[in-house]
Length: 100
View 1 (tube, rainbow, N blue to C red):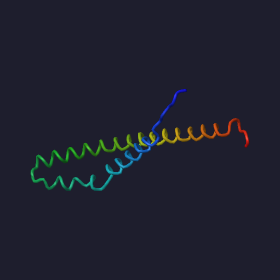
View 2: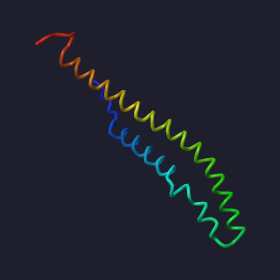
View 3: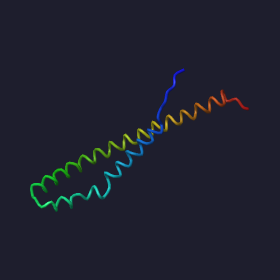
View 4: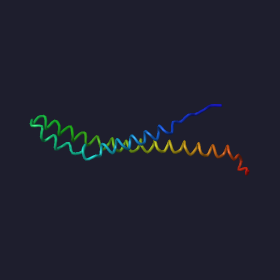
């Protein structure tokens, strides 16, 4: 008999970590870095920092969408395996709908 071990707890953990990562990326402290950039005191450095922030803002949007997809997929896989386990246990405990 083969044993398939699906780390449901780890998939739930991935889901939670991805959710927290997205929350951090969307947080006000991360989004408000523009004010810090303007206090650097050197135009070239400020310009480079603004350009980086603009590009990172564009990339952040794409990454956030992708994180949502991966997070939701991890949750769906964990839920599907948990439900399959529960159904298998129920079928083994009560084969062919037998009553006790």
